[in-house]
Length: 142
Image 1 (cartoon, helix red, strand yellow):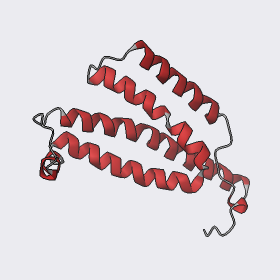
Image 2 (image 1 turned 90 degrees about the vertical axis):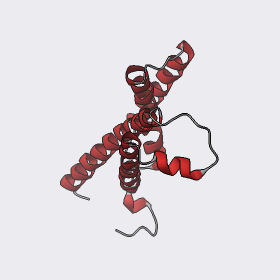
Image 3 (image 1 turned 90 degrees about the horizontal axis):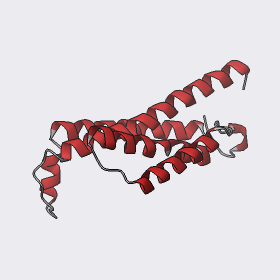
Image 4 (image 1 turned 30 degrees about the vertical axis):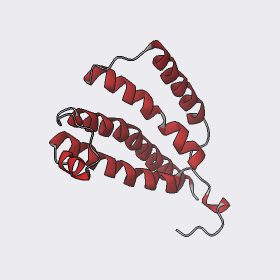
């Protein structure tokens, strides 16, 4: 792989990483926001959840989840699983912040400490090599 190919792949990986990191928390925000608009009901009836899917904010959240999954699949084709999962865990930090700001959720001190530890772990993993070496993967087809 040449230098320009390596840079292109690195830039693509970074862009996908940012999309995956931001799509998940925002999709969860829209899902939670939308479900708060649905009358409270604990139901074993799947029709309740099908109806909830048509709530506009829930529908946006579902669409974002679908895009998140597709982008994550592509990201996993470019970078190591042992890198992607820990680094994208920063989404938990963003989810907590979004829940606090937009949904006015109460976040305990213990939970903020846990969020900070997730952030530290993510930062530590983020300093490692991110792109998988295709030549090291037997049987991989391009």
